[in-house]
Image (cartoon, rainbow, N blue to C red; front, side, top):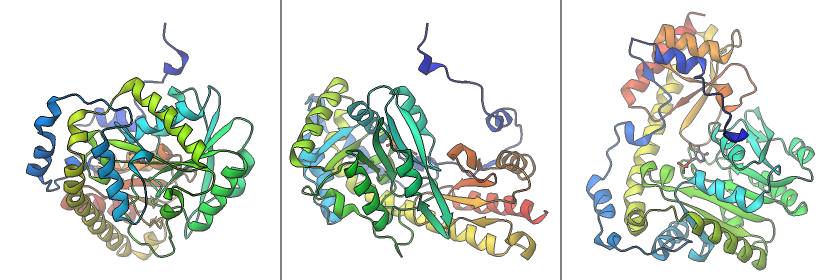
Length: 397
Ligand SMILES: Cc1ncc(COP(=O)(O)O)c(C=O)c1O
Protein backbone atom coordinates (compact mmCIF):
# COMPACT_ATOMS: atom_id res chain seq x y z
CA UNK A 1 0.00 0.00 0.00
CA UNK A 2 2.67 2.53 1.02
CA UNK A 3 5.92 3.47 -0.68
CA UNK A 4 9.12 1.81 0.52
CA UNK A 5 10.53 5.20 1.51
CA UNK A 6 7.83 5.41 4.20
CA UNK A 7 8.80 2.15 5.88
CA UNK A 8 10.16 3.87 8.94
CA UNK A 9 10.77 2.16 12.24
CA UNK A 10 8.18 4.05 14.27
CA UNK A 11 9.08 2.54 17.63
CA UNK A 12 10.29 5.20 20.08
CA UNK A 13 14.02 5.04 20.83
CA UNK A 14 15.02 3.80 24.30
CA UNK A 15 15.35 7.31 25.70
CA UNK A 16 11.96 8.45 24.38
CA UNK A 17 10.39 5.26 25.79
CA UNK A 18 11.98 5.95 29.20
CA UNK A 19 10.64 9.53 29.12
CA UNK A 20 7.15 8.33 28.27
CA UNK A 21 7.08 6.21 31.43
CA UNK A 22 8.56 8.72 33.81
CA UNK A 23 6.53 10.05 36.68
CA UNK A 24 9.19 12.34 38.23
CA UNK A 25 9.82 15.74 36.60
CA UNK A 26 13.11 16.26 34.79
CA UNK A 27 15.18 19.16 33.51
CA UNK A 28 15.25 19.24 29.74
CA UNK A 29 18.68 20.35 28.56
CA UNK A 30 17.78 19.54 24.96
CA UNK A 31 15.12 22.19 24.39
CA UNK A 32 15.86 23.98 21.12
CA UNK A 33 12.60 25.88 20.67
CA UNK A 34 13.47 29.54 21.31
CA UNK A 35 9.81 30.43 21.93
CA UNK A 36 9.71 28.06 24.94
CA UNK A 37 12.63 29.31 27.03
CA UNK A 38 11.31 32.53 28.58
CA UNK A 39 12.81 35.09 26.16
CA UNK A 40 11.24 38.52 26.07
CA UNK A 41 9.84 38.64 22.52
CA UNK A 42 8.83 42.10 21.18
CA UNK A 43 5.23 40.87 21.07
CA UNK A 44 3.55 44.08 19.85
CA UNK A 45 5.96 44.49 16.92
CA UNK A 46 5.61 40.85 15.92
CA UNK A 47 1.81 40.90 16.17
CA UNK A 48 1.66 44.15 14.15
CA UNK A 49 3.89 42.64 11.45
CA UNK A 50 1.48 39.73 11.08
CA UNK A 51 -1.68 41.79 11.23
CA UNK A 52 -1.39 43.89 8.07
CA UNK A 53 -4.62 44.35 6.15
CA UNK A 54 -2.51 44.03 3.00
CA UNK A 55 -2.49 40.30 3.74
CA UNK A 56 -6.17 40.16 2.75
CA UNK A 57 -5.13 40.29 -0.86
CA UNK A 58 -3.44 37.26 -2.42
CA UNK A 59 -0.32 38.19 -4.41
CA UNK A 60 1.31 34.96 -5.49
CA UNK A 61 4.89 35.24 -6.67
CA UNK A 62 6.73 31.93 -7.02
CA UNK A 63 10.06 33.50 -6.01
CA UNK A 64 8.42 35.23 -3.05
CA UNK A 65 6.93 38.70 -2.69
CA UNK A 66 9.52 41.26 -3.93
CA UNK A 67 9.46 43.55 -0.83
CA UNK A 68 10.16 40.49 1.35
CA UNK A 69 13.12 39.55 -0.85
CA UNK A 70 14.31 43.16 -0.71
CA UNK A 71 14.19 43.05 3.10
CA UNK A 72 16.35 39.90 3.06
CA UNK A 73 18.76 41.45 0.53
CA UNK A 74 18.99 44.37 2.94
CA UNK A 75 19.87 41.99 5.82
CA UNK A 76 22.84 40.80 3.71
CA UNK A 77 23.75 44.35 2.68
CA UNK A 78 24.01 45.36 6.35
CA UNK A 79 26.63 42.61 6.69
CA UNK A 80 28.55 43.86 3.67
CA UNK A 81 27.36 41.04 1.41
CA UNK A 82 25.84 41.87 -1.97
CA UNK A 83 22.83 39.64 -2.65
CA UNK A 84 20.22 40.98 -5.08
CA UNK A 85 16.51 40.20 -4.49
CA UNK A 86 16.64 38.41 -7.88
CA UNK A 87 19.04 35.85 -6.37
CA UNK A 88 16.53 34.83 -3.69
CA UNK A 89 13.80 32.18 -3.64
CA UNK A 90 11.58 32.20 -0.55
CA UNK A 91 10.54 28.94 1.11
CA UNK A 92 8.50 28.05 4.19
CA UNK A 93 11.52 26.67 6.02
CA UNK A 94 15.15 25.83 5.47
CA UNK A 95 14.09 22.18 5.38
CA UNK A 96 11.82 23.00 2.45
CA UNK A 97 14.77 24.82 0.86
CA UNK A 98 16.76 21.58 1.11
CA UNK A 99 13.86 19.66 -0.44
CA UNK A 100 13.69 22.10 -3.37
CA UNK A 101 17.46 21.80 -3.92
CA UNK A 102 17.37 18.01 -3.87
CA UNK A 103 14.64 18.14 -6.53
CA UNK A 104 16.67 20.63 -8.55
CA UNK A 105 19.99 18.80 -8.39
CA UNK A 106 19.34 15.07 -7.97
CA UNK A 107 17.70 12.21 -9.80
CA UNK A 108 16.66 9.20 -7.72
CA UNK A 109 19.78 7.36 -6.53
CA UNK A 110 22.06 10.42 -6.85
CA UNK A 111 24.15 11.34 -3.86
CA UNK A 112 24.87 14.37 -1.73
CA UNK A 113 27.79 14.59 0.66
CA UNK A 114 27.00 15.80 4.16
CA UNK A 115 29.23 16.41 7.19
CA UNK A 116 29.32 13.97 10.07
CA UNK A 117 28.57 14.55 12.90
CA UNK A 118 25.64 16.78 12.07
CA UNK A 119 21.95 17.18 12.70
CA UNK A 120 19.67 14.25 11.86
CA UNK A 121 16.93 15.78 9.69
CA UNK A 122 19.12 15.48 6.60
CA UNK A 123 18.60 11.71 6.42
CA UNK A 124 14.84 12.16 6.21
CA UNK A 125 15.03 14.96 3.69
CA UNK A 126 17.26 12.89 1.43
CA UNK A 127 15.23 9.70 1.83
CA UNK A 128 12.01 11.55 0.95
CA UNK A 129 13.67 12.73 -2.25
CA UNK A 130 15.09 9.24 -3.05
CA UNK A 131 18.55 10.69 -2.72
CA UNK A 132 21.47 8.95 -1.04
CA UNK A 133 23.62 10.47 1.62
CA UNK A 134 27.37 9.97 1.93
CA UNK A 135 28.91 11.30 5.12
CA UNK A 136 32.28 13.00 5.08
CA UNK A 137 33.91 13.05 8.48
CA UNK A 138 34.73 16.06 10.59
CA UNK A 139 37.62 15.25 12.88
CA UNK A 140 38.51 16.88 16.15
CA UNK A 141 41.89 18.13 17.26
CA UNK A 142 41.47 21.27 19.42
CA UNK A 143 38.78 22.26 16.98
CA UNK A 144 36.74 20.56 14.25
CA UNK A 145 38.24 20.03 10.82
CA UNK A 146 36.74 18.84 7.57
CA UNK A 147 38.34 15.61 6.29
CA UNK A 148 38.86 16.84 2.75
CA UNK A 149 40.77 13.72 1.66
CA UNK A 150 37.94 11.42 2.81
CA UNK A 151 35.41 13.63 1.05
CA UNK A 152 37.40 13.62 -2.20
CA UNK A 153 37.57 9.82 -2.08
CA UNK A 154 33.80 9.52 -1.71
CA UNK A 155 33.00 11.63 -4.73
CA UNK A 156 31.79 9.62 -7.69
CA UNK A 157 29.55 9.46 -10.75
CA UNK A 158 26.35 9.95 -8.74
CA UNK A 159 27.62 12.83 -6.58
CA UNK A 160 25.65 16.02 -7.10
CA UNK A 161 26.32 18.35 -4.19
CA UNK A 162 28.46 18.92 -1.12
CA UNK A 163 26.77 20.32 1.95
CA UNK A 164 28.57 22.70 4.27
CA UNK A 165 26.86 23.66 7.51
CA UNK A 166 28.32 26.97 8.57
CA UNK A 167 28.47 26.69 11.55
CA UNK A 168 27.61 23.04 11.91
CA UNK A 169 24.98 21.80 14.37
CA UNK A 170 25.76 20.60 17.04
CA UNK A 171 29.57 20.93 16.77
CA UNK A 172 29.33 24.73 16.41
CA UNK A 173 32.26 24.72 13.98
CA UNK A 174 32.53 27.20 11.11
CA UNK A 175 34.04 26.27 7.78
CA UNK A 176 37.50 27.86 7.61
CA UNK A 177 38.69 29.94 4.69
CA UNK A 178 41.23 27.36 3.55
CA UNK A 179 38.62 24.60 3.85
CA UNK A 180 36.18 26.72 1.88
CA UNK A 181 38.75 27.24 -0.86
CA UNK A 182 39.50 23.51 -1.08
CA UNK A 183 35.79 22.60 -1.09
CA UNK A 184 35.04 25.20 -3.68
CA UNK A 185 37.82 23.97 -5.99
CA UNK A 186 36.75 20.35 -5.48
CA UNK A 187 33.14 21.20 -6.35
CA UNK A 188 34.11 23.30 -9.37
CA UNK A 189 36.42 20.56 -10.73
CA UNK A 190 33.65 17.97 -10.50
CA UNK A 191 30.78 20.26 -11.48
CA UNK A 192 29.09 19.77 -8.12
CA UNK A 193 26.95 22.33 -6.35
CA UNK A 194 27.76 23.58 -2.88
CA UNK A 195 24.87 23.90 -0.45
CA UNK A 196 25.76 26.17 2.46
CA UNK A 197 23.43 26.03 5.47
CA UNK A 198 23.91 29.24 7.43
CA UNK A 199 20.98 29.09 9.84
CA UNK A 200 23.32 29.60 12.83
CA UNK A 201 25.70 31.97 11.03
CA UNK A 202 24.94 34.99 13.20
CA UNK A 203 25.34 33.08 16.48
CA UNK A 204 29.11 33.35 16.59
CA UNK A 205 30.84 33.01 19.97
CA UNK A 206 34.41 33.66 18.94
CA UNK A 207 35.73 34.71 15.59
CA UNK A 208 39.40 34.03 16.36
CA UNK A 209 40.82 31.92 13.56
CA UNK A 210 37.53 31.79 11.70
CA UNK A 211 37.14 33.84 8.57
CA UNK A 212 33.69 33.08 7.18
CA UNK A 213 33.70 33.04 3.41
CA UNK A 214 30.29 34.76 3.04
CA UNK A 215 31.75 37.57 1.00
CA UNK A 216 33.35 35.18 -1.48
CA UNK A 217 30.36 33.05 -2.29
CA UNK A 218 27.62 35.63 -2.14
CA UNK A 219 29.25 38.02 -4.58
CA UNK A 220 27.20 37.57 -7.76
CA UNK A 221 30.22 37.45 -10.05
CA UNK A 222 32.07 34.72 -8.15
CA UNK A 223 33.44 32.01 -10.44
CA UNK A 224 32.12 28.43 -10.35
CA UNK A 225 30.86 26.42 -8.46
CA UNK A 226 27.21 27.12 -8.12
CA UNK A 227 26.40 27.88 -4.48
CA UNK A 228 23.06 27.71 -2.69
CA UNK A 229 22.95 29.46 0.67
CA UNK A 230 20.14 28.55 3.07
CA UNK A 231 18.88 30.63 5.97
CA UNK A 232 15.55 31.56 7.55
CA UNK A 233 13.63 33.27 10.34
CA UNK A 234 13.52 30.08 12.40
CA UNK A 235 17.01 30.59 13.85
CA UNK A 236 17.95 34.04 12.55
CA UNK A 237 14.97 35.72 14.26
CA UNK A 238 14.07 33.01 16.80
CA UNK A 239 10.74 32.66 14.97
CA UNK A 240 10.35 29.02 13.83
CA UNK A 241 6.57 29.50 13.64
CA UNK A 242 6.91 32.34 11.10
CA UNK A 243 7.72 29.82 8.38
CA UNK A 244 9.85 32.04 6.21
CA UNK A 245 13.22 30.99 4.86
CA UNK A 246 15.17 31.37 1.64
CA UNK A 247 17.65 30.01 -0.83
CA UNK A 248 20.24 32.52 -2.12
CA UNK A 249 21.71 31.43 -5.43
CA UNK A 250 25.28 32.56 -5.97
CA UNK A 251 28.51 31.54 -7.69
CA UNK A 252 28.54 29.68 -10.98
CA UNK A 253 28.51 31.57 -14.24
CA UNK A 254 25.65 33.89 -15.09
CA UNK A 255 23.88 31.38 -17.37
CA UNK A 256 24.08 28.56 -14.82
CA UNK A 257 22.79 30.81 -12.05
CA UNK A 258 19.91 32.06 -14.18
CA UNK A 259 19.01 28.52 -15.14
CA UNK A 260 19.09 27.37 -11.48
CA UNK A 261 16.84 30.28 -10.51
CA UNK A 262 14.35 29.59 -13.33
CA UNK A 263 14.09 25.94 -12.36
CA UNK A 264 13.78 26.74 -8.65
CA UNK A 265 11.02 29.18 -9.54
CA UNK A 266 9.04 26.36 -11.14
CA UNK A 267 9.60 24.08 -8.15
CA UNK A 268 8.50 26.86 -5.78
CA UNK A 269 5.52 27.69 -8.00
CA UNK A 270 4.35 24.09 -7.74
CA UNK A 271 3.83 24.51 -4.00
CA UNK A 272 3.51 28.29 -3.35
CA UNK A 273 3.99 27.34 0.28
CA UNK A 274 5.07 30.63 1.88
CA UNK A 275 2.23 32.44 3.68
CA UNK A 276 1.23 35.91 2.52
CA UNK A 277 1.11 37.55 5.98
CA UNK A 278 4.68 36.62 6.85
CA UNK A 279 5.97 37.92 3.52
CA UNK A 280 4.21 41.24 4.03
CA UNK A 281 5.59 41.45 7.56
CA UNK A 282 9.10 40.27 6.58
CA UNK A 283 10.93 43.60 7.01
CA UNK A 284 9.26 44.30 10.37
CA UNK A 285 9.91 40.72 11.53
CA UNK A 286 13.57 40.97 10.57
CA UNK A 287 13.82 44.14 12.65
CA UNK A 288 12.00 42.56 15.62
CA UNK A 289 14.07 39.41 15.13
CA UNK A 290 17.29 41.35 15.73
CA UNK A 291 16.14 41.93 19.35
CA UNK A 292 15.34 38.23 19.75
CA UNK A 293 18.67 37.28 18.20
CA UNK A 294 20.63 39.38 20.67
CA UNK A 295 18.68 37.85 23.56
CA UNK A 296 19.43 34.36 22.26
CA UNK A 297 23.12 35.24 21.88
CA UNK A 298 23.20 36.58 25.44
CA UNK A 299 21.42 33.45 26.74
CA UNK A 300 23.81 31.14 24.91
CA UNK A 301 26.82 33.08 26.23
CA UNK A 302 25.63 33.07 29.84
CA UNK A 303 24.67 29.38 29.83
CA UNK A 304 27.98 28.52 28.21
CA UNK A 305 29.82 30.43 30.95
CA UNK A 306 27.82 28.52 33.60
CA UNK A 307 28.70 25.23 31.92
CA UNK A 308 32.39 26.10 31.65
CA UNK A 309 32.54 27.23 35.28
CA UNK A 310 30.87 23.99 36.39
CA UNK A 311 33.35 21.96 34.31
CA UNK A 312 36.26 23.95 35.74
CA UNK A 313 35.16 23.24 39.30
CA UNK A 314 34.95 19.47 38.86
CA UNK A 315 37.26 17.51 41.15
CA UNK A 316 40.58 16.91 39.35
CA UNK A 317 39.89 13.19 38.76
CA UNK A 318 36.62 13.91 36.87
CA UNK A 319 37.86 17.12 35.21
CA UNK A 320 39.90 15.14 32.72
CA UNK A 321 37.03 12.73 32.14
CA UNK A 322 34.31 15.26 31.32
CA UNK A 323 35.34 17.98 28.89
CA UNK A 324 33.65 20.24 26.37
CA UNK A 325 34.51 20.07 22.68
CA UNK A 326 35.73 23.49 21.53
CA UNK A 327 33.19 25.32 19.37
CA UNK A 328 32.80 28.72 17.78
CA UNK A 329 29.08 29.30 17.52
CA UNK A 330 25.53 27.96 17.43
CA UNK A 331 23.05 27.01 20.15
CA UNK A 332 24.56 23.75 21.46
CA UNK A 333 27.48 22.40 23.43
CA UNK A 334 28.92 18.92 23.14
CA UNK A 335 30.48 17.19 26.12
CA UNK A 336 32.90 14.33 26.01
CA UNK A 337 31.82 12.00 28.79
CA UNK A 338 33.90 9.12 30.24
CA UNK A 339 34.12 6.33 27.71
CA UNK A 340 33.25 3.62 30.25
CA UNK A 341 29.71 3.24 28.93
CA UNK A 342 27.88 4.20 25.75
CA UNK A 343 26.43 7.66 25.18
CA UNK A 344 22.96 6.09 25.31
CA UNK A 345 23.71 4.45 28.69
CA UNK A 346 25.02 7.78 30.02
CA UNK A 347 21.92 9.61 28.83
CA UNK A 348 19.73 6.99 30.56
CA UNK A 349 21.77 7.19 33.74
CA UNK A 350 21.61 10.99 33.78
CA UNK A 351 17.87 10.84 33.33
CA UNK A 352 17.30 8.13 35.94
CA UNK A 353 19.72 9.36 38.60
CA UNK A 354 20.11 13.10 37.98
CA UNK A 355 16.68 13.87 36.45
CA UNK A 356 18.26 15.63 33.54
CA UNK A 357 17.86 15.03 29.82
CA UNK A 358 20.80 15.32 27.39
CA UNK A 359 20.99 13.85 23.90
CA UNK A 360 23.32 10.96 23.19
CA UNK A 361 25.84 11.94 20.52
CA UNK A 362 24.84 9.12 18.20
CA UNK A 363 21.60 11.04 17.47
CA UNK A 364 23.96 13.35 15.58
CA UNK A 365 26.22 10.62 14.25
CA UNK A 366 29.11 11.21 16.66
CA UNK A 367 31.69 8.49 16.18
CA UNK A 368 32.88 8.83 19.78
CA UNK A 369 30.74 6.64 22.02
CA UNK A 370 30.59 9.08 24.86
CA UNK A 371 29.50 12.42 23.40
CA UNK A 372 26.47 14.09 24.96
CA UNK A 373 24.78 17.10 23.39
CA UNK A 374 23.03 19.85 25.29
CA UNK A 375 21.20 22.97 24.22
CA UNK A 376 22.39 26.35 25.51
CA UNK A 377 18.89 27.86 25.23
CA UNK A 378 17.14 26.70 28.44
CA UNK A 379 16.01 29.09 31.13
CA UNK A 380 19.19 30.03 33.09
CA UNK A 381 18.11 28.64 36.45
CA UNK A 382 16.92 25.34 34.90
CA UNK A 383 20.17 25.18 32.97
CA UNK A 384 22.38 25.79 36.01
CA UNK A 385 20.44 23.26 38.11
CA UNK A 386 20.47 20.62 35.36
CA UNK A 387 24.19 21.05 34.65
CA UNK A 388 25.05 20.94 38.32
CA UNK A 389 23.11 17.65 38.85
CA UNK A 390 24.60 16.11 35.70
CA UNK A 391 28.16 16.98 36.66
CA UNK A 392 27.64 15.87 40.26
CA UNK A 393 26.98 12.43 38.82
CA UNK A 394 30.25 12.65 36.89
CA UNK A 395 31.97 13.58 40.17
CA UNK A 396 30.83 10.26 41.67
CA UNK A 397 32.77 8.29 39.09
C1 LIG B 1 21.74 23.25 10.76
C2 LIG B 1 20.24 23.32 10.60
N1 LIG B 1 19.72 23.68 9.40
C3 LIG B 1 18.39 23.76 9.22
C4 LIG B 1 17.49 23.46 10.23
C5 LIG B 1 16.03 23.56 9.96
O1 LIG B 1 15.62 24.88 10.01
P1 LIG B 1 14.12 25.30 9.61
O2 LIG B 1 13.39 25.45 10.89
O3 LIG B 1 14.27 26.58 8.88
O4 LIG B 1 13.58 24.21 8.75
C6 LIG B 1 17.99 23.07 11.49
C7 LIG B 1 17.07 22.74 12.58
O5 LIG B 1 17.44 22.53 13.69
C8 LIG B 1 19.39 23.01 11.67
O6 LIG B 1 19.92 22.62 12.84
